[in-house]
Picture 1: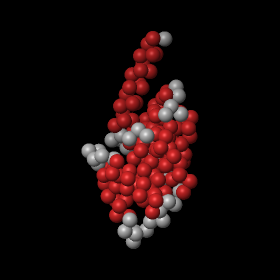
Picture 2: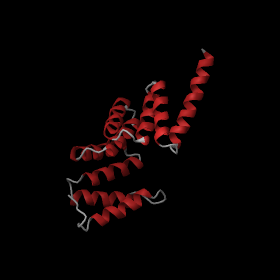
Picture 3: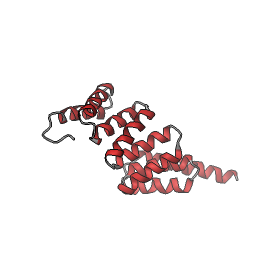
Picture 4: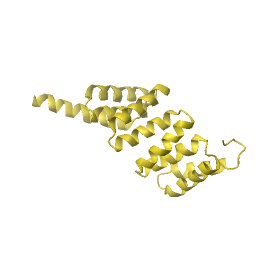
Amino acid sequence: MLTKEDPNLRLLAIADFVHDNPGEELEPALIVYTTMIKLAPNDARGHLARGTGRARKSDFEGAVVDLTRALELEECHVAYNNRGVCHYYSKRYDQAHSDVCACLVIESKSAVALCNLGWIDEVRGETRKAISCYRRALELDPSQQAARDNLKLLRASTSENAFRA
């Protein structure tokens, strides 16, 4: 387990900086995260960080492995949400729904998770639930642009379908 006194924590901070800056390549961060996992295999943070990085590179299967390991070590709403997103992109919508709901059990005021749940509900054909999720996400965080855009598109498509009936 890493502690604040551990000099390897500096490596994690550097990798996080690279990971969080969109113009930077992710590969150096992933190498550092892998090193952190080797140094502290029972620290969920390395697995969570590498899983999130792999998801950003569209390596959803590798991300699921890392995020699952992170959750085995420590329950974390971010890991559930990110794993749910990976399942979504892998078209495993029931697993995606389950993971994002688990995230919301831990952190009920996560606008990002509510927006993700809206996407999942939408693809599952649960339009009313999706609209509700997007609305709640916007209530919690009015700057949540993805929820705003998806709500607008969903309302427009719902209105068009109503006129076609």
